[in-house]
Image 1 (cartoon, rainbow, N blue to C red):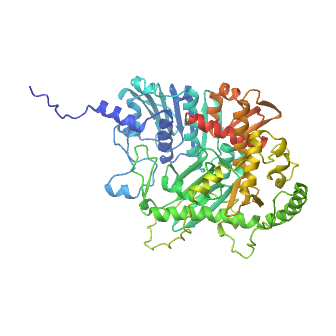
Image 2 (image 1 turned 45 degrees about the horizontal axis):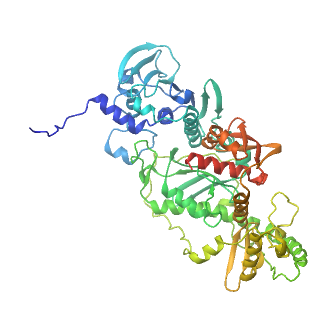
Image 3 (image 1 turned 30 degrees about the vertical axis):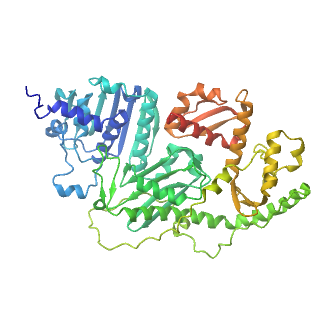
Length: 589
């Protein structure tokens, strides 16, 4: 008996279900695809309304040009699109969508109603499709534009429903999708309604600054740096964070190319390279970077949901982004040079007075002035005033020139520290250091000096660490950027990160005492701004966080209110710690 399986053409409905698995992963995917259609239709106002995390109800309304009545049915067929017509169009895509798969895939796994009317029509068109089958097609009265209602997502594919998260988590992902669209297109007014309540809206006035205020809040925006430049034909515009502002996760990072939110390992590596040596290991900068690159230099047809792109000149894009971000950060460093040197003079005097009380301890302090950079040319990017800058895009109708761009400067060779030195740095004793983050009156130098005078009466662990300090013959040279302790031994120099050392000290204390009774109520509750996914992780795990000392609650927008925190955490660190905990929870760690 011949058991060979015959090859056959899939039923169109089954083919659509398979396609839906690639394009429509969750409710946020639906919102993203419908928003992209609205943008391509020239909409100036887009409203998204959801219920139950988008599972039971999604509505996207726009004031775009609408769909002609004779094309409404065709719009729901696979590979039906008005955005490309020949193979060469794939080399010059300037629209958000082009495959013609979204509506077909969506209508295969949900109940969809569409109301649409063009400006030249007196009446609109209403079509209803359930599971890929048209149940109604009639004329109707409706405003110009398109209104699509999606109900009961995955009602006919129960296997997909079990992969959905909580309604609140799915809603947070939808908010993230709308947020990304609003940042990418600040000239369009967006509005999100969740379970009958307005969540946020943007003005659509073209100002990225106003959009950022709406989503990440004033406190975060005020700590970001506006950048705008053009390098090697790549226009770069957006916000990056000062090295002092960092987070434990990448949840507040985004790239947007020609108005399209994308993920890119190349761009991520470029920004990481620019921040290398400026952030503590494990910390991530905050940035939202918009790039304009001629469509002929991009391939956006490499991902089913169009979330990734490929570059024709990958190395040049990498260098443009890296050097652009580096120029801004270098400009900030130059600006702070004079302030730091003046501060060093005061700290040196305080340190001398402090060291005088340590008797025979082998401690020294030397000048730690920053090199005078007054004559260094300041970055054009960093010094230009872009407060009124509005994001604009290329005129893609103009042909691109073939002029070879200048090669961007390469970085200096990387230096990898010896593993033995790294191990020594990790093993540096910290219990003997006088860290006191809650007492800002103690001079910085006093906080970082080993207290050998207490060694005689200290617990065994402290005595042991003090002996280690003596054996290593440590000499405290000074401090750099209020962050790194410069330590000299007989044969080497160490840079000790104060923050990391303080964390190690807390870790040792927790190991010894446990976590009982660690919560401390704040005299004034603190408002913490998180990303949307971080906030939802906090709200979904309030009991877990309360067990380790955090009493939190919803404060609207992207904010949570913190009423209590573990008593070993400095108030200034609450935001960073809560953000890191949320990141660990999202990663199931």
